[in-house]
Structures are given as structure tokens and as C-alpha cells.
Figure 1 (cartoon, rainbow, N blue to C red):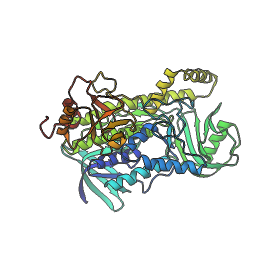
Figure 2: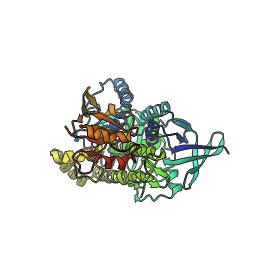
Figure 3: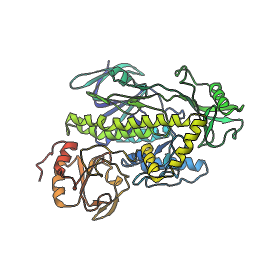
Figure 4: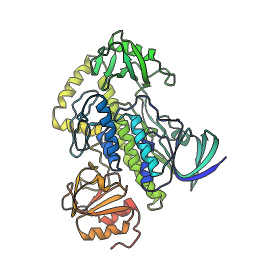
Length: 502
């Protein structure tokens, strides 16, 4: 068997795995991505990403590519690419259980950026490859073991089985993750209570169901947003056999049961089946092995939060793993990945369970939805739910009483420099931390971490007149209003200074 070595191996070339590869290669870390599929999966999955996910990718220079995909899709539909919110998403603001009432939150894009999951994977894969990531398709991880210095992987490739050694292994290989199962990670949660389908197909009657979200005594059917896209849910338990091939007859029967019509489906370009089992790994890290995306958490697709959650994992983990892999930060930095990201996933699991409950058929849920809809007319309730679905209110507990610390803000927040105003995103292309310094003393301190943080003279509209430390993932880690000095914050997140601190 051929033996090779690299710094990080990522199992899975889905959005989370590819976003992690982009983060690591931005820092110059060697990356090999293993993917068992020969090409991108074209089946209908997620059709958009929340603005917060688009903001994260914009920090790495992908905003333009994502916007071009959205514009091409909207043009094909004969509609303008509407711009809503600071991140450039479309006008739709989001829904909870099909109740389209959510509004934009401050410093966040609450709406959706239209980009199907397969197109997003293409954008990420192209960028990762341009940065130097090696993506090996038709290569499947079959076993691994770790010791104090490396992880040894056994891989089945098109030319046979071989071994690969890596400093770290990241499992981003989906809800049935082999990395998670081989590693013995506990994965507790709740079993599914629905059977759902997504289809891209033609029908003999395009108007058999109104466009949008429709609740019937037999279940739920969503017609659109693009012609031919159908989402159906029946509340009669999970699929009898999730591994059985999905047939057009099966999906057509579900559409007929739900709507009470004799609609005929034909020419299906994509058919998928899903349920709403909700599970969360007890930890995202075991030594040199880490989990990200659906490998760490699974839930129903309602609210469109899966891509947001997986990309958020990748962006949180990427810069930390890069610092540890390069020897710039202690190994303990990786423990903060579980500490910060697991609670975010836990609340997604809870809100998706709540959405399933609110979508059930029957007069009792009808009455509850009516009350719920009226509640969303109140700013406080709407703001809370908007933050919950879009992730715009996520705050990590970084040990500071300052409200700004631990929060993530839109990348186009303005930073005022001597040369003029600059977008925050344009200052974070390198993937380094960013110290916006309002005085020379803070600039002198930050110089000790050159190469790990970028230093810009100026102030942010988030904290006019104050110096702030923004982590690579966009979260504020310190401001000059904190009692702790900048030196402590930099050491905590970026390791010891290379040169004596002034």
C-alpha cells in the first residue's frame, strides 16, 4: 500500500468539508479531501443559504461568485436579483414553519441567497482547488486509528486500497458519518416522526396546488419557489426503509394523499426522501479527530439552517485548526470548537422540532399557528425568532461583560481608516485575526502577533473610538473597554507572541 502524509485530511466534499478546506488552505495548511462520490450530487437538497452563511464566505472573497450564481438563476426565472439587507440577499426575509413573517435583524442579512447546494459545492470546490487543496473523488475512508502524533487512515481509491497519515482528521462526511461511527462518538437525540420528499419534476397540472406553503388534512406540500420543485411531508412516522431507492410512483402517491388530487408527476430530475430525526454528537473532538456539519448534528431541513450550521462549523474550526497545525497555538485551542459550536447546533435541533410540531395538520395546530402569526407582529418576538433562524443573534461566551464581545457582525460593517472607509470583509481576506487599533499603544502590542493577526489603524462603526480584536470567523474577541489587556486576548486566541510585546 502507498503511504502518504499530509497535515489535515477532510472526509467529505460537501459544503462543510469544502468550506473547511478553504479555511485551512487560506492559512497555507496542507489539505487532502476524500470524497466517495465521483462527482457533485445533483439531487435537490438545500436551495439557498441564509445571509449569515453568505457573509462568512464573503470574508474569504467568495461573495462575488455566489452573487453571480444567484443572478443567473433569477435571470433564468425572468426575475431581477433583488437585494435585501446588507449582505445582498434576496428580498425574502425567512420563515418559521412556513409562516413567512420574519424581518431583518441589525447588522445581519435575515433573508436567503438563492444558490442550490450543488452549485455552492462547485463554487467552494473551485476556490479550494485554486488555493491548493487536493480533492480526491472516488476515494473512501474505511478505517482509521490515531496515536499521539498522527492519524493513520485506510482509504479505498479507484486504484486500490492505501494508507494515508495526517496530523488531524476532520469528519465532514454527512449524517451517517463513518468518521463519527468509527470514532465511537455518542450521537443521542430523537427519532423521526415524518416522511418527507423533495422532487424536481413536471406535473400534468402545474396548478394542482397553490404556489408556496400549503397545509392539508393529509400533510404539507410546498410548491416552488422555482417551477417544478415540490416538498411534501406526511406526519405518519419515518420511512420504512430509508435506504430503498426513491421512485416517482412513491412520491406521486404521497402528493395525491396530501392534496386529495389525482395529480400525475413525470420527468423527475431529482427525487429525495428525508425524515426529521434530530441528533447531536456529545463532543466534536476526540484527540486529533474532529466532526463538522451533518457529521456532528442532524435535523430536519425546515428553516433552511443546515448549510448555515455546517459552514459556521467550518469557519469556526478552520482558523483554530490551522494555528494548531502550524504550531502557533496550543492544542487546547481546539477544545473551544465544541464549546462554541455545540450549543448553536442544540438550539437548531430544538427549533426544527418546534417547526415540525407547528406544521402538523388539524384544528388545534391551526389555532396555534394563528396565535403564533399574530405574535410575530410584535417587534420583540419577531426579532427573537429572526435571530434564532438566521443565526444573527449567536453570541459565544468569551468571558467578557461587554455586549460586543462574542458577537459576529456583517462583513460590510464600515471601518474608518486614514485612507477612507473600508468593508470589514475586505480586511479579512487573509483569514487572520484583525486588530482595529484606535491608538498607537494597541498597535505596538499587536505587532507581537504579526502573521497571525492583521493590524489596521482606524475605528469600526461597531465601537467608534475603541480598539477591537475581530477573530478570523468574524466574532469580536476584545475591545478596549474590556478590563483585560489586548495582550491577554491575543495570547488566548493566537498563542504566545513571537516577539516581545512592546
